[in-house]
Length: 216
Ligand code: NYM
Ligand code: MG
Image 1 (cartoon, protein in one colour):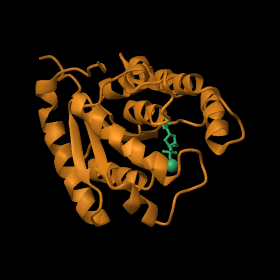
Image 2 (tube, rainbow, N blue to C red; image 1 turned 180 degrees about the vertical axis):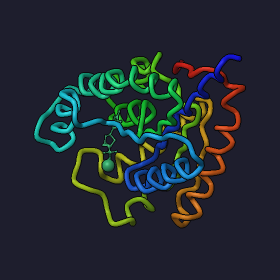
Image 3 (cartoon, protein in one colour; image 1 turned 135 degrees about the vertical axis):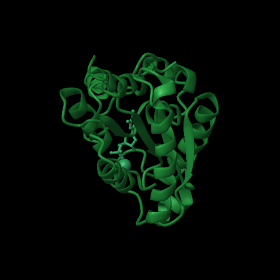
């Protein structure tokens, strides 16, 4: 008899405003998936360790300026340079948790209100990237986020920008599929439970979803 083919991993994205609790929730989710006996990997965007990532890091810290379009395309390129390895991990049965992805990419750039940088324009370079099986949006108001120990000092970390980002996330998520809106205003454990439920449902659907798809 033939050996059973490896069941592919799931591609899980966690999105939200700065201070929504993404990193803590990603770590709790990683432990949950591991405990269930599944291989799991955590990655984040921007990946500041690559040469492109270093340009992005300089920009975010304010030590370099960039044209809005140019930096946007660098954020996208930073995903494209990892796309193959995500596909390989998924195919070999590893579930990949991604902290921020194309959704952040499109909305943070579009939030700058540059007249030639619309949400539609910003989404285009993402077309063809691995498509998440589920995107968990940790939903929290900009005011609530601001209360959580305040923002950092990087670019975009202010309430005006975050308010626009939040609106654009909503607009984008109305157009995209497989989005789970999670109320991130609750306790860590409650939020984590909601995430586990959404992810378990997604993993149970994997066989009917079939192979990893691409963003459209
Ligand atoms: N960001 C993140 C973008 O502007 N475009 C992108 O494509 C991605 C992935 O980078 N404020 C912004 C959102 C964040 C900032 O991310 C740094 P983090 O997760 O706070 O380190
Ligand atoms: Mg941040």
